[in-house]
Amino acid sequence: MSIKLSKNLENIPPSATVTMTQLARELKNQGKDVVSLSAGEPDFDTPDHIKEAAIDAINRGETKYTAVDGIDELKEAIIKKFKNDNNLNFLKENISVAPGGKTIIYNAMMATLNPGDEVIIAAPYWVSYPDIVKLASGTPIIIKAKEENNFKISADDLEKNITKKTKWIIINSPSNPTGEVYSKAELTSLAKVIEKHPDLYILSDDIYEYLLYRGSEKFSTIAEIDPEVAKRTITMNGVSKAYSMTGWRIGYCAGPKNIIDAMRKLQSQSTSNPSSISQWAAVEALNGKKEFLKDWLLSFEERRDMVVGMINSANGLKCLKPKGAFYVYPSCNGIIGKKTPDGRIIKNDKDFAMSLLESKSISVVHGEAFGLSPYFRISYATSMKKLEVACNRIIEFCDELE
Image (cartoon, rainbow, N blue to C red):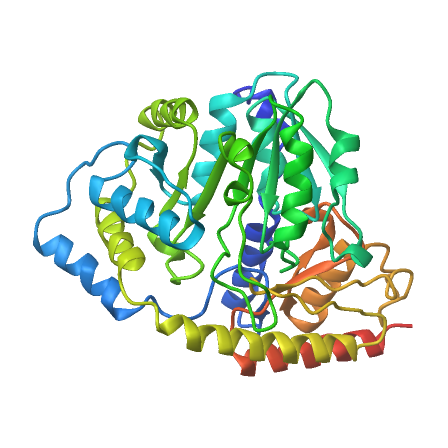
């Protein structure tokens, strides 16, 4: 006998990034020399002063339940961060802390969406956005961004896709999977459209805020640009990417009190509070020194430049140089239709990614998972040595195609 599963869940695939990472892990366990470029996880260790804050919290006995959506000390650190970095003013009642940034997004959608509500998402998108919307009984409305526009949507694109059913737009900058960044001028033009639609809310995913490279303008988030739009914005962030704290599972956001209250109610019936120890570590991350970021950014930039150069030298591949995050999103359009040495035709970017994994033990994520083909995502959040090995194998793979 088998139980009948939720209809919402039946239409949701597993996360493609998790799936490819797991496939790479299984091949490694079989003894294969796999280089995984599929996980969005910095290879740097969590800085020592943050780890020490966690140890101190354990020694003080900070190991009990906390308030459902975060301790006061962490909310105060978040308020200070938003004020100092983004010129945004909030009270504790406007702040929510959850077990990871994904949970923040999930809570926001689950707390606000009803059947028929639409959420505008630009493709390529982070793989979980549309599926979270579907789980919350909403309808994702996908705007396909163009490579010639650096994978960013325009104000006209947005205006054309707003209907009476539109409830949210999700903005992610710097972007996963492209690493592209919306300028202040571009966000201002989007805000002017949003301002005309008073029932439209914004979820601004700023998780890669600190990962901007030389030549990029100062980071901007949409809530700081327009006071009216700010009243309808959930600004989301976390400690996973900038502080290399992926496993600590702390995401946070600020926004309208009524939405934050609803998210708190939902979290009280699901995960309850984030790890108490992780919260104290996050307090130190937000309040403490950040000098380590300078070296990390230089390292990421060096990796980016090498990967972009090597990928652009591969037959059939083309890659833009992004301004932030730690991903590149190359086109494999020049590969489609070619044959592998064993005679298989590469029909799409998923075939490309799977053939690359099978023949060269390199794990990337196919563009279909991000809503825009024929592309694939490389995470360069790993060592130069591994990246060089991986890129040489990709070049070799492309050279062997007929």
